[in-house]
Length: 298
Image (cartoon, rainbow, N blue to C red):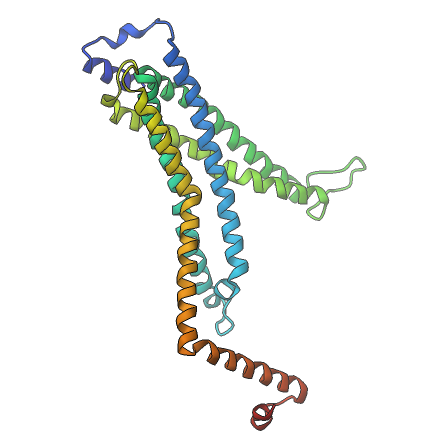
């Protein structure tokens, strides 16, 4: 914050130390409020991205059991190498997609506030955002660790009832804490630590782009409104629109492939092979062996 203040006021030919003891203007107060709002928006964005990622991985495993299930023709650990590779490939692509939205929001915050509230509002964005991010960081990490520690407390048999009986891992309390740990995990491992990177990138972007902002937003505030609209559209697209676009492209490609296979007769051949396989399995179940003549006459 000091480096940002010194750089801007030195460029303007002023002594940055003269700002000490000055009254807070309406722009600095607005910048402080914006720091709280943008920090909370980033918090919500990262937390929803984590929940979305968990849902995507669960749906991928349910919809593609042949890709994530262990191979029957291999022994452990070779049977799990390809399924894990497929799962990691899918998760990596989705993770990169879900991180774009918080990144845009982080880099867009100084551009929006600097042009909408001027350089003084930008100073309070960095200063207030640093305080809010630090406080939330400590709170979220400790809250997540509390869920985890409470579950381990029961797992190790340290919790006892009023009668002195041990409340173990088979109890309802332990299962309830398992649900809480699913909430506390993202807070402890993702959202809390991510706030450190958020305020660092906000400060870095503010320092690099400080020459774009005037002391007062007399002429730049319309560009701030434009930045809000652009930021909102980009965040919305990479949050939801990109996934919808990819699914629509996959649907069109799948329909095109099915149409080509139908025209070439591939679908009919697959149906015949599937029917023969079902007949063969039925004969095996009823007779205990395979008779090719019976399969052909069935």
